[in-house]
Amino acid sequence: MAIDIVRSRKYSLTVSTPVMPASGTVGFGDRYRDLLDFEKLGAFVTNAATIEPWRPARGTRIIPLDAGVLVHTGLPNPGLAKVIKQYRRAWANMPIPVILHLLGTSARQLKRALPLIDEAQEIAAVELGISDDSDAADAVSLVAAASQMEKPLLARLPFYECQQLALPLADAGADALVLTAAPRGTARDPHSGRLVSGRVYGPLIKPMILRMVGRLRRQLPEELPIIASGGIHSPQDARDYLEAGAVAVQVDTATWAQPKMLERIARDLGGWVATRQKDALPDEWNPEMTHTEVIQRRAT
Image 1 (cartoon, rainbow, N blue to C red):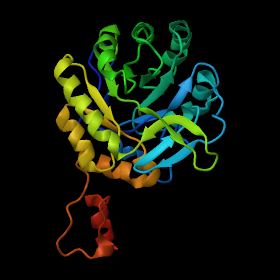
Image 2: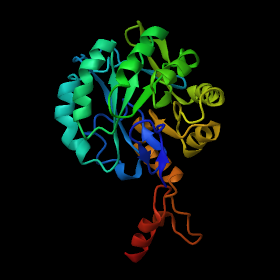
Image 3: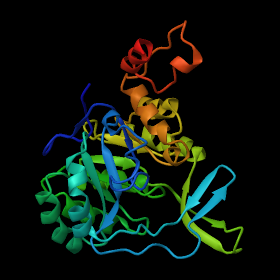
């Protein structure tokens, strides 16, 4: 199965299953290697890289919520040049396409970064993160600048401005839209008593983003792919997004709670999950097992 997740204006970007990790969940390629079979995923989306180095956030970074979690990391990274230098060998060994998640604060900065990205053959595409603080004009200029590179460009939209920015960013040169970044929120740290701002993750955001995906699929050009992200915790959650009009999905916090869930969703949507044999014993079968693995277990 081959699924094209960008519109064909430059190079194509095809995946074998419409499931990938969301940026910020599985690192730059150096984490989860012993927990996940990357070959079963459609693509690998890296943590966020910025043109200049960013330091970690100070103070509380994670606050549990009644139905999710609030996370504030500051998106620490050593800067784009060092990220590419440090991880390009790991990306070259990936059995799936690598999508670099890039944050740019200005069009001028992005233009300086494009030669670095185009030179790195290990990067198949770029996912440009649009800041929640960007107005429409700034967001359009960022996408227009980034679209000058040779690689496909995915634009990840902020949650609250998604409806207003989708069509302008498509017209500015985005080859696909990612809906959406996790919404921002504020919660009280139970330990310090202070209010902390961050991004909110959990199952409850799925119905809201699912509605956005359906509405925008009807409004956007048919050839522009939508990749959905937010609140996916089961194969059925992912299927709901595909039914609403997305061509692929990105899984975030479910991976932190159950690392194998990302792979299970990918196997399910990729058609790699075996049907349970009616005479199978409990220790002969699990939901993540492939048909080949069933045969191997029976042989031993």
